[in-house]
Amino acid sequence: MATVTYDHVTKRFGDVVAVNDLNLAVRDAEFLVLVGPSGCGKTTALRMLAGLEEQTSGDIFIGERIVNDVAPKDRDIAMVFQNYALYPHMSVYDNMAFGLKLRGMP
Image (cartoon, rainbow, N blue to C red):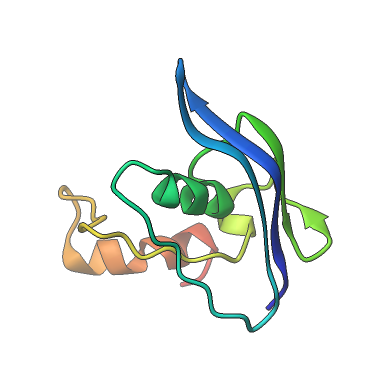
C-alpha cells in the first residue's frame, strides 16, 4: 500500500463544481470513511483516484507518483460500485474474466 494524496484537486462538470480544492492525505494502512449528503463529491473523488474521472485541476498521488495521466488499469486501485457495474451484453463468465483479459492473463 501507499499514501494517497489529493493536492488542490477540483472537478467541474460544466458550471457545476463537484469537488472544490480537495486537500487530503490518507496514510498507508489508515482507515478512512467519506461521509456526506448525496451529491457532495464523495464518489467523484474516488472515481478520480481510480482514474474513472479526470480532475479539472490539481494532482493526485499514489505514494510519490502523480497518477493524473496514469490509465485506470495501471493504478492498482479497485472500486466497488453501489449498483451493479456489469456489462449486460456479456455472460457472467465474461464479466468476471474481463479484468483478467485487460491484464493479458489467460
